[in-house]
Image (cartoon, rainbow, N blue to C red):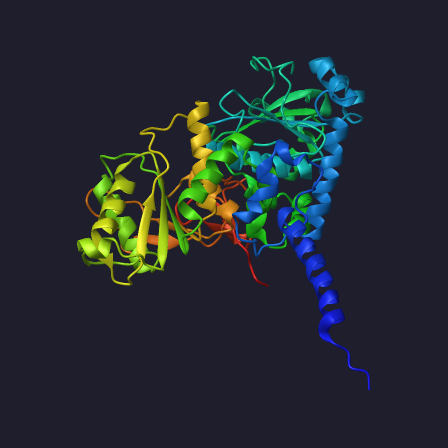
Length: 494
């Protein structure tokens, strides 16, 4: 009788384990195929190391989305800045002939509006629009945006060159809004310019009423260069366009994963930002059992005083068992005991009062569960400074740190919070609006989706030209918890 020992089996098992481990690490690094490995690691450390700080997402990108991203990368290589195709279109500028328009590469130029949160949600929306319309996305970054993100596309750049014909001024370019007002969009192609400003700002009421209509998209598709100005997450509008419906369904079988996938694809912290993120995480968050993020945006401290907001946050955390209630005051001996269970509270706010109040409360008292609560607030700028590079890199650091948390409580109507919870694949608890010394009951509501809210969606039916509630037409759109007239994509289980 031949007796086989465990040795050979052990070697085979080790080989399999090593192989499976390597495959798993590669899959985690590349986010299940969302990313490609065609980058120099030293140029963007976060691209290859972020998986060590973030739990693997349960939301996997579809095979079709991955293929569309690879196709887009190829298009960007062929048509990106300083290629022959780019130089041909941009050199000719507004004098580009109609005959050339259909043969050349087409572009979507993104321009910045408002704070970093708004900029990031519009960038993701613009990227999806570029994919759907076979355009190359180029971003016009000012000095306040340089140094925030790594280049997202391999072997090319997404930065708009400064020799772009309309870098300094766009006063003499036709606008989509004017075309609508003058009814030019319904006439022949002869009226279509070669450069067109597409203004989807929330402050321009009426112009975006027909952006979600197929007839508008047919004509916009023929304009070689669209210059986009928006502060809105207009992705739900794209889901309203019949010609895009099938493509979007194939890319996103789960409708509430659009920003989660596109955001993780596009937004990789630069090495400068990554150093701030990783250093803070390792110093304060790495060893905690659980991490709770609080994103607090107060637009008017007279209408909603800090004390009211603090009480509302505490009511929300207790109601949903995110943080424990306090017990008796700590004795000197208890304050030096080492507890096993601990939670970190990461506070992101322009005001220092929130972090200080929570830190003092949990430091002075025991908790009813015996847990130790450690409160951290990376910064408190006092006011938003949208066009300041130092402010923006702090904001990006805090957005990313919030996205690494296990649960989030966010302020209503905050795009800063939208980016954080969408990147993290989280459905946050959204605080209700508080007024004076009282706050609503319940103090917060769980979001139906991890998608950002489109605050100012279109209201017009493309065919009947009357107002309509689009939630009645699209089951995967619901009104937002924090903006009743807004729209948010949700996942619908059929």
